[in-house]
Image (cartoon, rainbow, N blue to C red; front, side):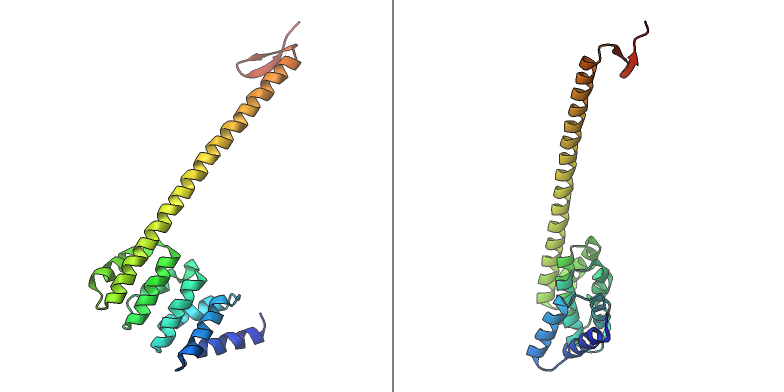
Length: 183
């Protein structure tokens, strides 16, 4: 990582709070797609910035980055005083699909003062449940495929053993172990 990358990231982070919405959007898009390990911690720390616009844009970026390291800071952002920050934090948590967010999302879905935040929290909960259900289905399919492959392998082993016994008439099987016949 060179100083040039750090300077670019810092400039983009500064632009997240610009009064011009176009500049904010461009900086948000650029940071969302910036391939650097420095982006995640810097953007995550913005969730506690004094500038609500930066906090909101940080939640938007974290939604796109999709790193589970941002789950806890995003859950904390659900308590932000600004409804836009809570809205985007809820959306990001839905995208991440982590069940740890469900209790706080459920609480806000019932009690938040903003209708749009309530709606986003309900949507995020559904996304998380869908992701979890999908993961469970994938696990079940993988388990079933493993069982099928294991059975195929065992069948091949049985066939190899059977052909081995046919090819070696001087040996007999005793309780599953081939032994030489004593003469």
